Image 1: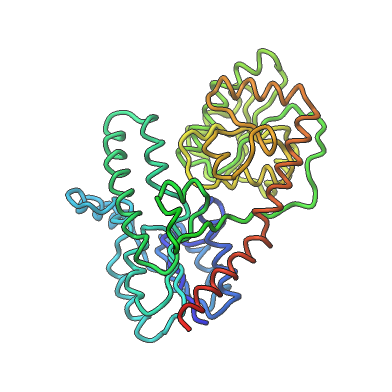
Image 2 (image 1 turned 30 degrees about the vertical axis):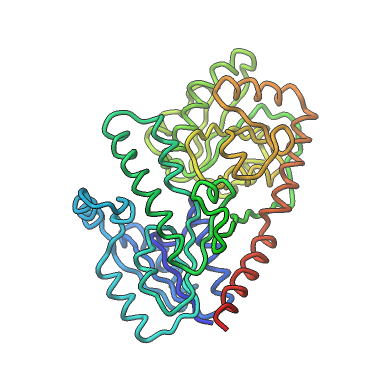
Length: 393
């Protein structure tokens, strides 16, 4: 089997949710056949990643996509109906190289990551094409609107409408659509669509889990340049921690994750907050904590950060949108809080109830083992691809 993998970002290193997903699928698909990787890159920042994937994948095609080109694309798209994020990744050289590759290679399967790469996938008319929506991006934009003001609110309002129309229009163009959670499937309007399925993220399951002794430590993790993560960390540090410190003055809050923005770095040493940035062993930091606290008010899709915490057996407090995407039960697999006051109350409850911390932690870990383990997702991946290729027999 010959496979073509299309990605708007080089799928390495796995330092953010989308790259964790794409790198996992890249490696699994490479084991299933002869794989070609095509990706847009910025050689200034991606060179080391390009070198690593050149060694790992025998056939790679990296095309430079500069910030100047991307911004010019955005300007040209002002009076079009195409979502700006799709226009942003338009690259004529990528199109040319793809067409040249298709002349000499017959691909059985094409994996296309995100709607922004769909215009390229449409060129691959002789292969079975999987469009991996991952998240319902228009849903995330819609949730973000209530937290924005001025020009940004106007821009994202327009982009949300454009993206929603584009997402729906794409549903019938390819052989199969992958979505990360039931919430995203419903938001895309694809619940009854026979070519659309849920393909969840996989999470490594550590052999060791939390020991449940109280360490007086809250934690939040994620890529710390992403807006919803930045806002969540700020919320905990500046609004939730002051209320908790009045009752628990020795409580600490730790922020872990790559690429911390200036806004995140400014939280270091504020209200017993420590910003660690990237760490070599994320699971060690999670196991050394009592509670994972995640006020993610406008995120979409499955949040790997919550699954990673649950995999370690530490209880998670998060928003209803995150819990729904995980198909997790409130006060069983995790705890749900709808606003900052609820986060304070739920955190106080878990701090004072060791039995509840342990029960919710263990139940959350069991859920991850059942639905999001490496083995579960690999089995589903093979099943779907086998079925898809047999349709052409």
